[in-house]
Amino acid sequence: MSLLLVASLLHQEPEPTEKDWEFYASVYAYRLREDRDYLQPTFTADRGLLHLEVRYNYEDQDTGSAWIGANLGIGEEVRFDATPMLGAVLGQTAGIAPGLKATLTWWKLELYAEAEYVFHFHDHHDNFFYMWSEATISPWEWLQVGLVTQRTRVYDNDRDIQRGLLARLKLGHVDITAAYFNPDEHPVYMLGIGVGF
Image 1 (tube, rainbow, N blue to C red):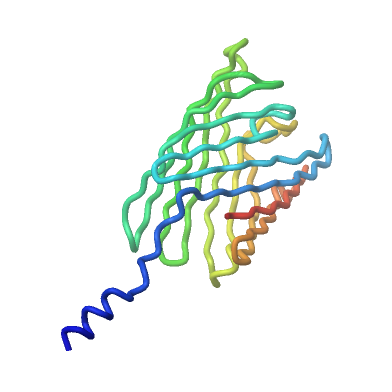
Image 2: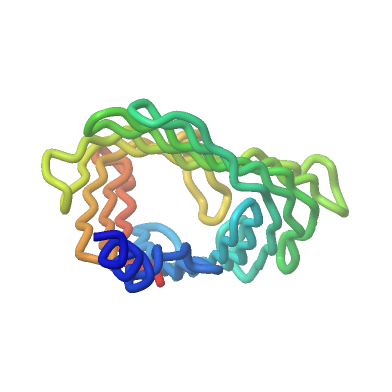
């Protein structure tokens, strides 16, 4: 009996280990009625506490940014995750930016926000607070729907905060996101795809 126990312990499958790195790449296409259409790609790399990120056309068109941050989280049934970051912005807009990504989840509900404040290198009058936030529900694991808001200077807009509707399909490692801002006037359409690996 003891020999069988020792033999079974020796032949147990090893515990799966966490991946060293997790990557996520996305690109959002913006369709604008009164300005130039554009693509906004983002790439993130995470390993434990470390968060790295690069973006293009996020703070301004023809502008890139690079970020470093720390992944923090607490809770199980009610979960709060936050990633404080610091970024360098270069291109048509140039500056330094503290930022934050945060997610609060409970049941099928999720509140998500990402924000940054760009301190412009050349003119403090061009300093600006950027924000994207979502309030969503997932009636099924593969579908997320809700409300979205954003504050941006990437394109001309007469609204300080734009509001809209959001839908996201989750198909394995692939996310497909659609958003429709300003449905009453000056609409903005956004379609994005993201892949995690």
